[in-house]
Length: 179
Image (spheres, rainbow, N blue to C red):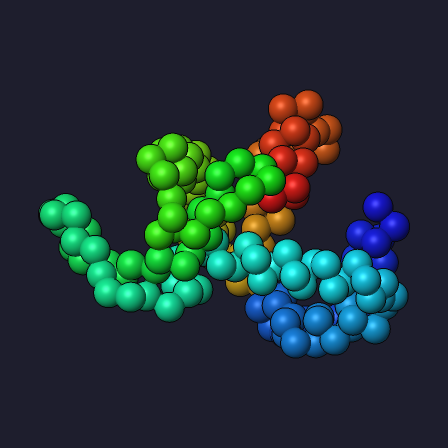
């Protein structure tokens, strides 16, 4: 993790404002000064992003709309993108207009997996926020300085942080990093 150590060193030299935040553009500039570029590798990364971008909604030209008759907020008509790529398997893609039933089933299954990940992430963020906000309110009432009420201070005070990483947590982290 040599790159992580380099990036941490760069971040440690960024100027923080009164809310302990730093400017994104300054972070990007500082990191960019530390990166050596392999042009062919970068060219392939850009090409991969271009292809994968075409798999996301809103990245190709719509040619009308679909209305599946679903009720509820945001469930009505939506744009139809026939040129959007769908994942067939790990190695193959298909344009939506040429998709077979199995391709749409694969897309649906992928959406269910993503929904589960997003729901899990939302539950974690909600729990983090609720606990942090409650603790910060208690600390303000106790007279603690606002600048000391950081998330890092909260997780230490609440006993939520553990230095050791379990195998399950490491596997989840590695899977997320690979996406």
